[in-house]
Each structure stands twice: as structure tokens, then as C-alpha cells.
Amino acid sequence: MTKFHQIAGALRNWASGPRLRTPRWALHREMYEQSTLIVTVFYVVTAAFLYEGSRELSDLAVPLESFDLLWPVAWISEVGVHTGGRLIAQLGIFAGLLGIVAWRARGVRVLVSLALLLYAAMSNSDGAISHGYHEWFWISVCFWLLPTESKVAVGATRAGRMQFLTAFSAAPLLILFFYTLSGLYKCWYALAAILAGESGGFSPDALAITVAWRAIQTGSQPLWGSFVVDHPLLGWPFYSGLYFVELVSILVFFRPSLHRAWGIILIAFHLGTLLFMDIIFARHVLINGLLFVMSPFALGQHDWRHQIVAVPGLGRLAAMVLGRPGSQGLKTQPGTAKDPQGRIPAVT
Amino acid sequence: MKPHRRYSLRNYSALKITIAMFVVVYGIVAYQGGAKSERGEYFPVFNWSLFTYVKSVRGLTELHVKRIGAHEFERPVNFFELDEYFPTASARSSDLKKNLERLVRARARGDQAQVATLRKLIETRHLSGHGSVEYALVYVVFSPVERWKTGRTMRESVIAQWETGPRT
Image (cartoon, rainbow over all chains, first blue to last red):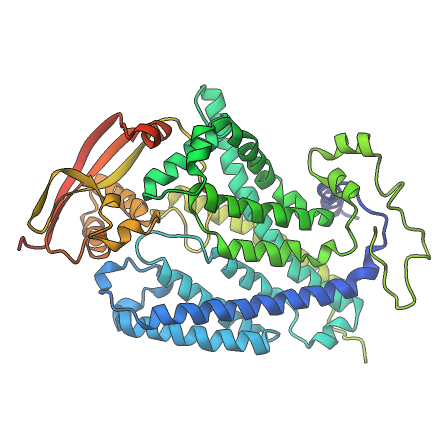
């Protein structure tokens, strides 16, 4: 074993935290089935997005000077807004439909990504870049790595299933990485504020400041904005909790027992952005639902004690209180795990 | 069915390394884009720095309207209060704020072409439909919570004043 493999192994063990002793390999068939379902749903929803957006694009009547075209749609300055919008709309409809029926072909997946990129670029060519479609686009790029053979051919061997699941895992890994990036920036500047003796992200009134700042920037009136501005201390635990959830998200990728819980927490966070800041993250709710609440890697990992012990940073403390799951309550005996159909019953 | 020969543990390891490299490269490009790009990112590689800065006193470039067509206001009015004239005033989006910031940065570095592009964009998207509009870019310093509660600001300074199209 090389030094690189030793370091990679040690890092993986650290990131993974406490593990179940369940022989997870026996669940790979179910994980594979679940992940193919998620990919199919992803392409169906993508088609719906492209279909919905195509009407807006095919009807563009604004002059070219009201755009500051991003590089993927810079060519529109040559053909005109009307023609360019119609071309992107038609490509979107065509690619969306192809994605539903033939996503196993890599060329189709690339075409869907291209359609998403053009749509996102056009939507963001009004000078300001919003990020509603970024994650969706990058998930479609991650799916380029999926094997191209039929479901039966890929699922016939363990190596094929592993290949599919590993390629699929790029999507949740990247999304959790995005949350960690966001958390890193927030924590970095919050720490800098503490060192400078100023108000910052860790201040008790941080949520109230953020809510008021956003409302003044956009002229909006969030549903629960007044409440949190009038009672800033009530927002403190939620805001600090959000920093923690975002910061450690990347570790959650390696702890599948937490996928469902993290998916729900992140969805709750995005619902909170509407209530407190009047910002809608509809696609992010879908993404967290598909990749984490429905995570194929979380199959068979329902034990709440193991989930608590797996929470990054808090696990050791929880383990002292609850004992170490896996060595007691969660242990499965070798040779008894498989049922007659060759499946492992969910750990309960 | 015959096992598919294409899949092997070697491919599987290569795939894992590819994914890890992809994430690392994304992180580097996203960081660079956040630090160096005029738009804050090398589209579509975003660094996800959202609501990173929390400060009790902040400055914001705002669009204040002095006159719409023949109607002159007694005092300049914040664009967001003019939704009866301009539909985007009630859009509750940060697009205008981002474009105003880009416009101010372009002006500060003397990029006249970019200033012209962004002025046209803002005037066409946000200030059209009612003839000539006289407006100002105003830098306002305030405490967000204080302004939310009382409307008070600490300091206001006019950065630029412009007029859209010919006066009718």
C-alpha cells in the first residue's frame, strides 16, 4: 500500500466517523435501484424546467441593449434576442424530452447540460447573476460520469453497480461541498469580526441584521422579518446552527446515516430563507429531497442513536451518553444478515 | 446474463479520483472567480459565498428617482417605492442592487464602455415606460436594524446623476 493510499484511507476513516458493522455491500442492489430512480426523476424534472422556461425564452421582446450577455449566450448578439431565445427554447424542449427517454446515453446527458447552461446563462444575462439553476446544472454534469449501458447490464454485476453508485455519488458530494464552501466563507468572516471586535456572523443579532439588510436591499417585506428584528436573540441559535450545518456538510457525505436528517435540515433552512428573507430556493428544496432525503446511501440506516453519534463534532459527546452504536444495539451477526431473497433487512 | 467485463475495480478507483479532482478544481476556480471576476464568479462556477458579511453598519448604492416624465418629486424617492410606475420595483430581487454595484465599480475604474452598457441595461429594464426619468445613484450608510425600525440613515452621498432619454 502506497503512502497516498494510507493517507487517503486515514482521511476517509476520519471523515466517515463511527460506522455500522452492517455488511453494507449486500444493500448495493437496492441502492442501485434507488439511485436509478433518482436519476430518472432528475431528468423528468429537468424536462419540466426547460419546458416551463421555453415559453419565456421564445417570447423575448426586450431589446439587446437590456442584456449583458454571459459567455455561453454571447452569440445572441449576432442573431438577435428573438431568434436566440427561440433557438434556446427549442433546444430545451428537445433535450428535455430526450433526457427522459434516453438519459443512459452520455451524449443525451451532455445535451441536457448544454440546454440547462444556455437557459441559465440567458436568465442571468440581465447584468446580475442569480443562482437558482447553478446546482441543477452541476448535478447534470456529475451525471455525465454514469455508465452508459442499460439498467440490467449495469446492475448485473457488483462492479457495475459500484461504478454507477460511485458516479452517482459525485452529485451529493458536490452539493454538500457547495454548502461547506458557503459555511467556510461565513465562519471565516465571522471569526474575523470577533478578532476585530465588531458585530459579525456569531453576534446574537446576526440574523436580525441579515434580515434587515436583505429587506432594504430588495425592498421586500419577509413574512417573519419583523419578528426576528424585534426579538434578535431568538434568531441566534438558528443562525449559529446554520453556520455549523453548512460548515460540516462535506463530512455528512461520508456519513450516510445522516443523509436524510441533513436533507430535511437543509430543506428547513431554505424554507426559512423565504420566511425570514423573502428568498425562494425552490430547486434547492428539490435537490435536497432527491439527493439526501431519498439518498440511496442511507438505506438501512434508520437508528437515531447512530445518527446522533455520527453528527460531526458532537459524536464523541453523544457516544459517551448513548454508548457506541454498532458495538451494542446496532450490531448484526455475520451470516444472519441476509434474508432468503438475498437482502439485508433494514437496521432498526 | 454474462457479467459485463467493462466494469472493474481499477475503473472504480479511477472514477473516485476523477470525482475528487473535479471537486478540488471546482473549489479553486470558484475561489478565483469570487476574488477576481468582475461579476463575482466565472459563470457557472460560483463560490456560494452568500450573506457572508454581517455588519452592524453598512453602505449600499441605491437608485433614487427625482423626476418621472413631467412629474418632479419634492424629494428623491427610493426606486422600491415606485412600484406604481415601474413593475420591477416590486420584484423583490437583488438584481438591481448587483447591477448598481457593478455600475459604480465600472465608473470608479473609468470603464466608460461598461458604464454605458450597464446604464442602458438599468434604464431599459427598470426605468422605462414613462418617458424621461431623472435619477441619481446614492451611496447610503446605515445600520440595517435601525433603518428597518425607524427609517433613519447615517449618511447619504450622491455618486452620479443621469437622465434617461430626451425630456418630453
